[in-house]
Length: 234
Picture: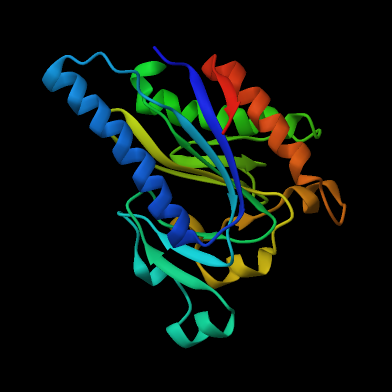
């Protein structure tokens, strides 16, 4: 089992370009697995982890409801935002500057073959990361992602998640609001959940700006510990 993960930080990159890049990495792993099965080739499968920040974009998952996007095409253009229907689970979400997006493209045969456990591990990575900033975050029953003040009128989501998996290969991932412009969430019903607020790390800490590189390093630390993996800069 290959427990090394090739790490790439793509910086600020268009959503569609990043999606296409993810699909290429995803397909390469699947092709290797198919070759191994057909030819007993015994080839090692790769694992990847992409950090990226997207320009303003709204994405709708396979099970999502388009009515949760509250903007017309003209209004999207006016806000300098784009929109895509994509092949992950979940409903609608927003990505934009000030948000750390992580896309693990893993062959779970290298780790464990359990999608439920995989999602819980992704949530745990974020929960442990935010605990380092003194925030007590948690899961919300029946709702993916990471939340604060679950079960109260002040419940708010700080990290959204949505993944796709085929033959135990994953893609898509998580979006953690660090210095995000929360006004963009007013244009959607986030994840299709009405009456729940969205927050960002800088808002919770009462500061103008949080060091995003520091947050990324904490995410990688907890990810490597939970998945018992080693990151290699690509």
